[in-house]
Amino acid sequence: MLNVFSLSNGRLFQEEIESLEELARFRPIWVDLEAPTLEEKRWVKQYYGLSIPEDAIDDDIEESARFYEEDNGELHIRSDFLLIDTDDEARQVRVAFILNQHNTNLKSRGVLFSIHDEDVPVFRLLRMRARRAPGLIEDAKEVLLSLFDGDAEYSADTLEGIYDDLEKVSRQVLSGDV
Image: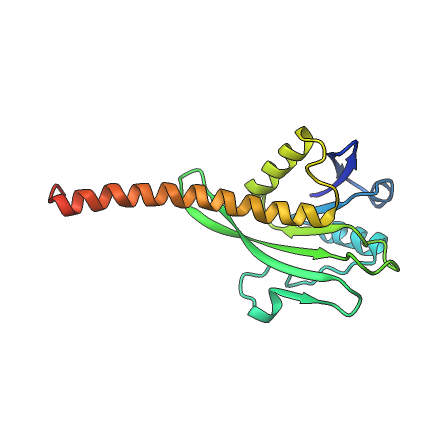
């Protein structure tokens, strides 16, 4: 699924894209590719001149591939976002980001691209907040920073819950009421 997010009156607006022609109609600050098809990747390459690496969201990557800058100025960042399943199992979702802030020769300048295999709760949270709070997001870099900020907040809340559970278990073990 390919979604673009544009700013209008300080708010983030989402459009689901279903063709190359439709992609060309928008001037987004964020292009989100969730489980992208080959066709959607091709649209991004054709319109923005952006090649998404084949291993963008592979689980096994070297540390040097987590953060690097291409010769054309594209910044590539790969990070894991926490996801809690419906049965309260914690796991991570790999997300690749590509951001070109400087190269004015590319249509991708000022657009954040995110690539991931499944929906990420932090992404939903940012979309909701940015729709309701004008001025929260002003550019692609702020989208990226807000996503990392949201992940830290989401992870901290989850860890607090885990620590509360551990505290209860440790009290039981130490009291001998096991």
